[in-house]
Image (cartoon, rainbow, N blue to C red; front, side, top):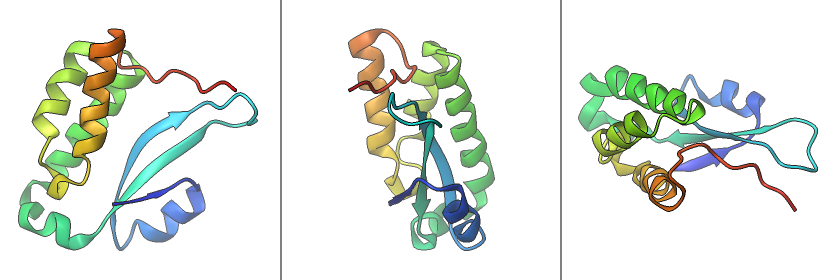
Length: 113
């Protein structure tokens, strides 16, 4: 999996790759929040191509749960999505579960320096 941080790169790549938003991060010294997307190579999703639309929808539901700090839904979706997308996002899902365990919240805390 590769990460991109610019909208224009996302637009260029989304016709050839599966692109999924990860999180939008507010950094104190940046005027605008930074969104991270992952780029998943085709060979990672071909074995589950029939399920790709559903898996993408579940991933979007997870992002909504994170933004709304809905711990119950986020926990369920992280567990359900683990192993999907060829396992490329498993670390992301594990980190969300660790955040919930550590803080009781799934919302991303702003980065401060």
